[in-house]
Length: 398
Ligand SMILES: Cc1ncc(COP(=O)(O)O)c(C=O)c1O
Image (tube, rainbow, N blue to C red; front, side, top):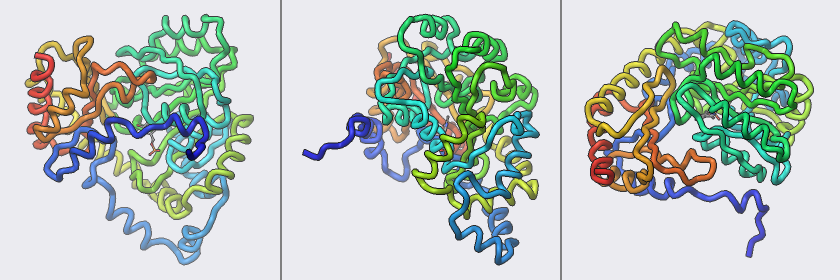
């Protein structure tokens, strides 16, 4: 028998992936992906950027680059992040191959097999898989509509067991829960964690996709609050504000963490795609990033509102959800004991797919939730698809 490493043996293709292969028909309505809308990509802007490159810049784009990132992009991205109030000067910026690589590098930097790690429940599946692959021992802290359950966090910290290696969380337009952390919850987290030597991995990939500008002050990340006595490792991405095909993300981390991360990255892929970095740099420098995010924000808001309206109209009264104020997702809470895998099977028969709750449960068990995403589906299709989801729920739950 092939003897894989233990961390890798634990990785399984999810039941959902298998179910999804049943849903390959082109007519199926998909509320399952976290992909930006295909028709929303800034194709013309990218064409223009490429056409405008000098021969030298095109050569740089085709060449290996420095492990930490192209100097031009490091400069323009630093400026972009500074404008959002992030303490770039006091930290180091590392360009990564998607923000998932940033999460992987941080996991590799901190986790030995069996080490405890604190995560939200529900949590982004990509991060959970990364932590599992390093054989982390996941402790789930429940998520509420205002952020982490602070009492549960306190209990976990006071448990007397081995100290967690870090706490991973996503404060804005959570995947899958769709919520924003309140200022109060972030302040309580800071108070609890100060001086404990438990770094935070703060995953902030959706914060540019807000529906309401007046939410911006309360969306300030803990990294931007810049508390004393906590190592905050912020991860971010071009995936949702330009295109995931570029595979470009970043981490903004304290100097003493950065050094190890750069070495880890060197052994992983030497450098992130130079080609993408040249494009992303011009995208920021030309100001196109502001025009573009302004446009897609409006489109995602239209889609989000269409989905909220359709859900309110069609869902049975026993299903509840938090209305999203940005991002890509809505998280439906079904009655205790409901099995969203059975509902998904019925939904696929009707021509619609979503993602089941247990995909995002660190223990892989709790299944009475459903994630529906509105990012890659036009409003009229959302209006056709949601009644089918509601029918499937009624068929299973009554
Ligand atoms: C919360 C969250 N973090 C990180 C990522 C990873 O994004 P990427 O690796 O494309 O930057 C995603 C992708 O969906 C996400 O939802």
